[in-house]
Image (tube, rainbow over all chains, first blue to last red; front, side, top):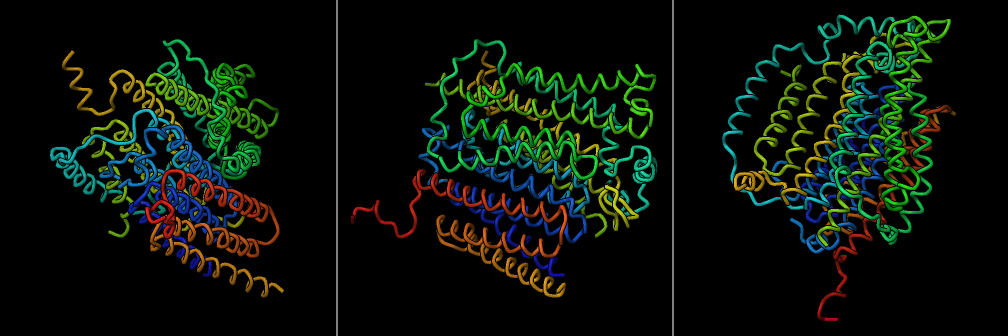
Length: 94
Length: 310
Length: 115
Length: 107
């Protein structure tokens, strides 16, 4: 019961994160939204695995926590690479 | 997603899309699939996309007009598909035809015949082993294709030092150092735990590749290539397929059928076990090295592109 | 209608992906459309595998009804094969960029014609 | 004793859910990037800890407990690191926090 409430809250927050990812306005907001979305997905999967009574799904949550971190690093690296071309546009990205 | 002109935003959204579809797979009871989609759809795909974007530029050309012909075709197609879909069995129906034939047999007999609880793994590696062999070969071919397209036919660019790449991010480096062993360990766990829980060669391969890619991102490509040189990777890609194929041949030698592992040991169930472990190992090696190879090739290609511009 | 909503989502995603592939001029974006299309097929297979009341096809005590493992196997391999072929396509895009200096369809076609 | 543990776990879970919700609201409603990041970052670690703690109490001894611990460890390490890196590169990329007038002519 309580697990369901938590899952619902998580889904609502995930929807909020998607809204933020769509709205922007800067690229960093989008990255933040993706990061938030990822963490919430980790929790959602953990909670769902308990709702379904299959704790072995926790492996999937674990891999999510990992992937999430890596994608943030990948994004930052992307900026470092194309710094001369990209950075000046970053702040006022539409 | 359709309208955003900034390709970078599109890639970010497609990362969310990968996460979303993986959560959906979890809700649909497909833990193994969610595993793979998590690592691929949310991890490797955006990563490769980003690498490509560094080369092709972040912004798309201006295009404001809507294309009406494709739109029309799509509306018609959607209508036709909706009509067709209503003939499908309802969602979640127990008596749907697709659950009829072999699926029942897999569910009822595979725990006894193969002796492992994860039906997905037993179907993947044993019942449909030939199919999986084909898929591993496809991955191998794709890796070879990427190498030929991006690294072949061109003098090798001198490797520049990429030490300064992430030098500003000391925190990231330290945390990365802590995480990479964990990731690799987790990859091994997934590789060898695939018979009992969600996991297996495909997932483990991707996780392993992600660990090495993380290293390459934090410490520079040349350092990563010192750890796993391209030549070794090329060998490994082929080695995985070779292991897979030769397990099949070994079955023939001991008098069984191709990729039917029952004869590998005196007890058929043990034989199946040995066969599945070996095959998953082959799959894991191929997938991991193919992904790392593809990533290295992409990074090198975009790097040399930048050098040419300068 | 409520019994068919999964198919509706699949059709929507599929059409959306296909539209992106057809209507967008940027090759990278076309590939993203292709990815959406691909995922819609994955969702289609996985949702046909679901049995209501069933649980994941990993044997545990006390479970009678399992979801269908076969479509899951097909999609599991399809995802990894999909990323491999997708990376091949991305490699081709990189190569096109090197050869033509652009990844916009119009520009490439124009250059081809002028040759 | 089991009742107490159930109560504690429910409490943790509910508190975590509330924190997550407030964090999500903050990300959606706060005026600029750094405040949004504050909402996401601060609530994230606390909420994740609470929810995972709740699940741990819920699950009892076993392999799942260990995995939850690993998830907690992971999120606790990666979350702040990602936030740090993100904030740093945002600052580097030219974003300024609200109220920071150091770029204006008045100074």
